[in-house]
Length: 284
Image (cartoon, rainbow, N blue to C red; front, side, top):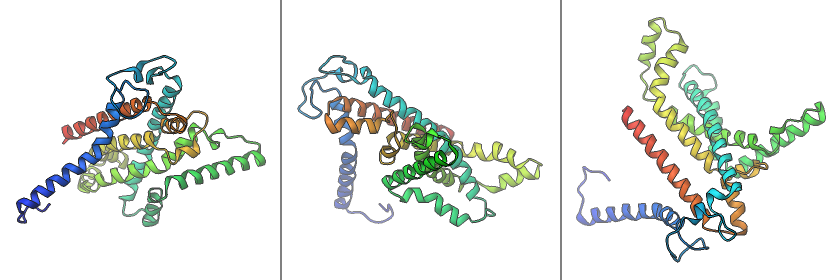
């Protein structure tokens, strides 16, 4: 809405109704699935049968809660480990890439920047299949030629980390690069004129300026990794991540424990977003 233009009461009313319906469309499914996590019913949907915490803590033959299901908890732990490692590696590499692409003397800058963005335009299914085939063929070649068996080239935990890192680092690069656009290079020139080394300038001036963007990029990379399914499904080994485990469960049977898992994920993401917002606001 352009505030300087005249607006009729009908336009203002229609605009407010549109905004209201838009947010209802976004939020209502999340609210519904969170409420149904406490439904005292053996079915995943309505009707409402009363309040219950069984789908979190029950340990019976009929009902097995989230915190009493060792396989489900293992998949959550696997997703947490994967998300942390992917976010850590992506933040380091993505931040370095953002710094490199801001250097005007960086050779083949345009071509390499295009290649860095390519994982974002390639469908996750295609990316997962290509990584799986490349890793498998490389592993077979090394084993047949040199007798070397590299486990990470087979579907496994580390192959999932590599696959998710391939596109999460691009998100980090874009987020940190956007913040870097606001950086005043005069600060670096002043530090260099005072005989600071380039490493000191980056560590003491550039990185502190980018701290909020780096933390935000870490959180975004973690959340993307934690919820990724399209790429992970082709690379996962014997220990599935949470999205893959939920997919395998819902194919055969669906209980409100899936709502309980969704409630925990929504709560975790909301809390992470609020903490990140509060930290950035305090720094500003």
